Length: 372
Ligand code: MG
Image (cartoon, rainbow, N blue to C red; front, side, top):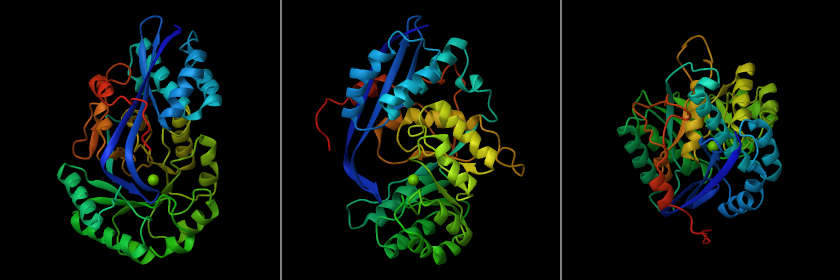
């Protein structure tokens, strides 16, 4: 079973109304999918994220010529070799070859991973709360209200991009808009130092229903995270940009976080991603996947979460939620899954269990023009 074809699908959507986080406003959303086909007619999909120009050049000039003719079953070896050329691209190769392995076995990918603990995985609606509008707070609250009306019961909103007083007014508005059994996470995208993060403590002490505070500090400040964890009345989360299971070790060994947030687009390869989840379990620290970009990536996060053992004995069915992009992004529709009651039913069919929407792939295909 040799790799015979690799098709690439660079996708672009220019946002009619830019939105963003503490890092600034986004004017577009992009995605990069690949489809690897083998000489015995099996094919699997993968996804990665980076500048479209970089990925497209990398795949067509280096990665595709290197992979054609290689054994599709040598997934880990091939991911390692692609990682040397482009780490982000290797994630797509790992996903596609995992799906091919499952299809060859006639199994769902969760079955070749050792089977599932559950068929449904909770998701939370994730927002980019800032816009250029003067009434950004009102727009943000309305978006959260729409998600609540659609059945979500957990939400993540942004802080860190405005003066703390403005952000705290926003959080108070959001809290007032959601009902008592709903939960909220706050994400600062590494905006603060420890002193600024501690300025949030009075408000957090009055908000018992917070899921977590995400990345108040640069993730490299492990000792400060440890101190903050002692002083803050809310769980701490972070690590979405780390690239290997071992990169999480300082955070885990120094007990600096309550939740790690690995992303299958950023940890190189789905096998390494799953190793990261297992490592979190070994350290007794929760893992809630970051999966804002990429519908296929989110599906892989859901499949992996279905296979993750429970984090405690008190609620044997409980599992950490997966992030669900609740913003204007047509690429969410590439994967035909919709949350219901704050959960997603994880598909059971062969491979990844779903078909991607190829009409959307064709409609949003990037034409090579500049977009930044
Ligand atoms: Mg984050």
